[in-house]
Length: 461
Image (cartoon, rainbow, N blue to C red):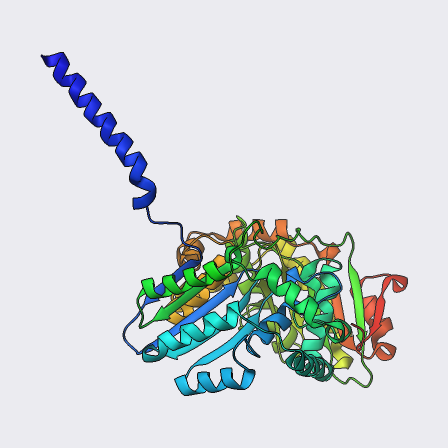
């Protein structure tokens, strides 16, 4: 009897297991078509929604620099059923805002709307994202607008120098391509190319929705699923990941030649590190002590406070899916540029050799720990953090780990990381100024041999 009872129980268990396996596909929640991270916050009747496409300027095909940004801007210029004017009118009537931001590794549609208007707003954005018409007339208008903006940039020395330095540092790597593109490539864009890039990157595997406000998360998730159904990936892969950039084997100097400059723009830098690198937080502290922007930072103290060569002097990291850059930037008068460059190089060499002092470490650590809470103290900042985390493959909650990670460091760890990271012998240097006045002195200050110094006209793309 006992054996019979056990056998019956086993058979029942097997039957139940088989039944569960048979119905589990129907009971299980299906995988979400689009990744969504939404924080409900009912304190104000507002909703902020960011729809990101995890494919930015680095996915621009060769010879089509700026096309991803162009696609993003064109989304707001017409759908299958609406003109640009009608889209603008609907947004105005809702009291809503919708704009586009293109980064190296993401294209983001940023929206804000009253919660009472959320339903028509989401419907409109769904149409904008899934049914763009890319009208020829608007393509022509946008082409002229972007080219006009790029021509205006020729008069902005700071942004012009940053553009040239990025190209010089990264050489042939996609990180060196300008997000807005080049005049030549923009002028050659046509509807077929724009549509092809849209089809290439606007699909389910690349979408990410991040937001916060007075709405239910399930509402935003359902909207995201609708986008995924209308833009399925099929057999398409997520955006291709670019290769890892590398420093050139030797120190290099570029002079961006612009006539009649009384002030220069100087960038000195190298390939950086990913934020997930084991040395990142130690380097973050070391950089803050060296060039964090405060008057206590070493670079500011030596370049501005003691010598008065530049109104500002600072250094910073730029994050990415791959190591991007570490850059020191200053903008001295032309007469002081060679000496300022030489001193900056000396300070970097000294930083590698000796690291930061105990007072510098204590200042940097205390300052960064005390300010860490301000990185995520509002819903909007947490949304920005989540966008950065999800588009650069950082662990969830990474941006909230700064205080604890920095508190755990000591000066020896910081200095060891600086010694490993810095390569003064491989630095890239770019100076925007008048070459005829500065080339000889800058060549001497940089330590680069005269025949190797690159001089390019400021109008060169």
